[in-house]
Structure formats: structure tokens, C-alpha cells
Image 1 (cartoon, rainbow, N blue to C red):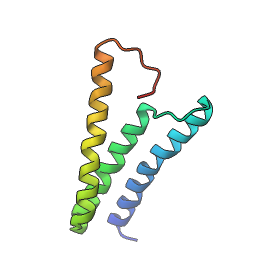
Image 2: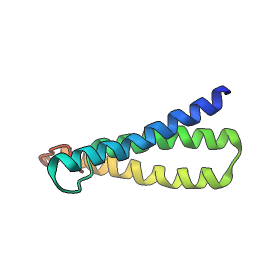
Image 3: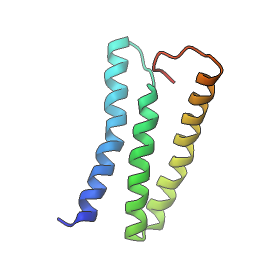
Length: 93
């Protein structure tokens, strides 16, 4: 297995972690919630997978991951904005 394939699998693992963390926290709270870490795992996995897609020269994969990156980054920006304005956060976005 070459290094790029391993890199792609690392991206997939980071991307999967967002769902795992969301599921665990939702189960603990007894309701569906989206933790802040969901967005960070989304961004990390998305960046890695976008780089992988560029390396593979796959425009479909690049477009899909690139579009998602905008959403993940914007959600993180909104969370940070809320924190700056004194909104109390409990780890849930």
C-alpha cells in the first residue's frame, strides 16, 4: 500500500470519528446533539480527503470535499463568534 492510500485512509478515519463522537454524546444525553468536535473532525477529515482528491486528480471528489469544507469552517467560525460574545457553551454547537 502506498503512502497516498494510507493518507486517504487517515482522512476517512478522521471523517468517521465525527459520526462516532456525535453518536456517543447523543447516547449519553439521550437526544440527538451535534458536539463542537463534530465540526473539527469534519474539517480535519475534509482537508485530508481534499488533498487526497487533488493528488488523485479527481474533480468529483474535489468538488464534494471542497464544498463541505466551506460548511465545516463556517460552523466553526459561528461557534467561535458565539464564544466571543459570551454565550455559554456546553460542547454542543
